[in-house]
Amino acid sequence: MKVCFYGTDEEITRVCERPILALLGPRHAQPVLAFELVNVRVTADPYQTMFRLVADLSEMERGERD
Image (tube, rainbow, N blue to C red; front, side):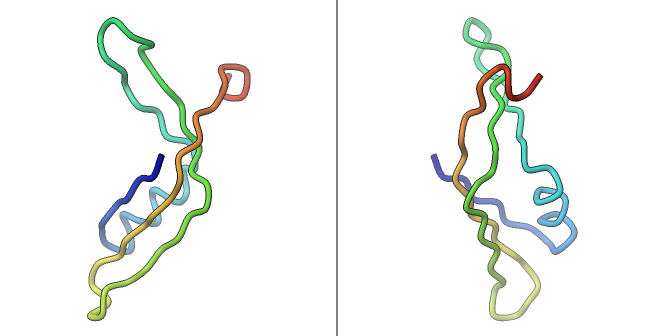
């Protein structure tokens, strides 16, 4: 699965510093899913005010995140 974040330099840096994301699932499903960011690419707009981070998400197995 691909994910895209738009933000300032500081916001994109914060996402890059945490390569593992936890996503809350629906109430009756698995409560928390952990994903690792892989193949991360960061680009800047022509005016250098906003940045775009594009990455693939790889679901982590329970043993990898404990």
